[in-house]
Image (cartoon, rainbow, N blue to C red):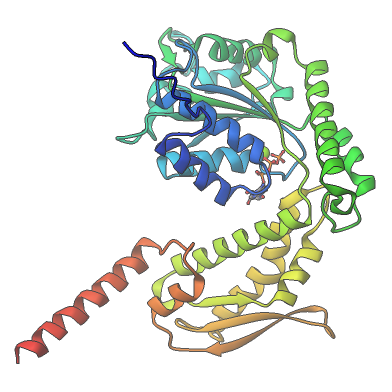
Length: 391
Ligand SMILES: Nc1ncnc2c1ncn2[C@@H]1O[C@H](COP(=O)(O)OP(=O)(O)OP(=O)(O)O)[C@@H](O)[C@H]1O
Ligand SMILES: [Mg+2]
């Protein structure tokens, strides 16, 4: 045997992990560390190198409200099993008492209502979103600092041995599950570190240079992890594979989220009954207005979403309900400096669905119905072209 001494590159990821990373980077803004950790764990799962007898991965997500913790979990499910709703969410605050724990694991035989309770964490429930190619479940325990002792013990068993015993003694296997836990612990300390450096509506302080931004980001991260260490026992922290501190979102991140959210609103419009589909655009001044109205350090992107609903979606629904906007229209929203609100103008009408899809751009996913409609329109065209060529 001759020695090759060929240097290998362990930083490259396989196709599956690469495609997961690409999708996550599109859907989640400014939380690259969380994405990297999820992709790493997924890569280990794909190659079968995850520790046996444990969940695929145990993640603890810390950080301020509205910074994308839940969104990241949904986006992972969306990327892997094509369904953002494939996440089983357990709001720990709702399971404080033992009878509430029964909703999760069912009550023991003989107890009142034993037969009627269908445990939320049964094997069938957690496996229900598996696809032919991806057999991973996504379980999210929200606000774990509010978990009762009973829930806590249950959680420790899942994190450590990937098993849960139901009320009727059946075992549930979590070795094909990604477990995500979220907490806002330490969020106020983190905000107070960032807030003095933030002007209203400004992002992390770019002017101070990347180095100081990095330092600040590390400080924020450390303060989050310290808060978690103070609150949670070492036996819990030891069972976590990755603790990720989500950063408060700055202006540039919110700007990108605004575009994502506008895309979602457009998708909602195209999914509405076909006779109502239209396309809308927002001018730069209009976007700036939505950003200014929707920026609040305390509430992150949640505040931005609310501003979009109030200032854009609600007026658009009024325009639809009063038939001022109809199928095939192009509506533009612009900022009016005098009235300081968005003004809506109809720029075109009678557009084909394909023209509207082209206007919306390449990132847009055509809804199945519209796609089918346009495909059948194409078929009709080809069929009639075929007929005319035969003549
Ligand atoms: N980083 C982000 N990238 C993309 N969208 C985001 C991001 N952060 C927030 N959003 C948007 O804001 C909404 C609320 O965010 P999310 O529910 O993920 O917040 P959270 O961090 O889980 O907050 P909480 O601690 O209150 O549960 C999401 O549904 C998403 O539309
Ligand atoms: Mg959340």
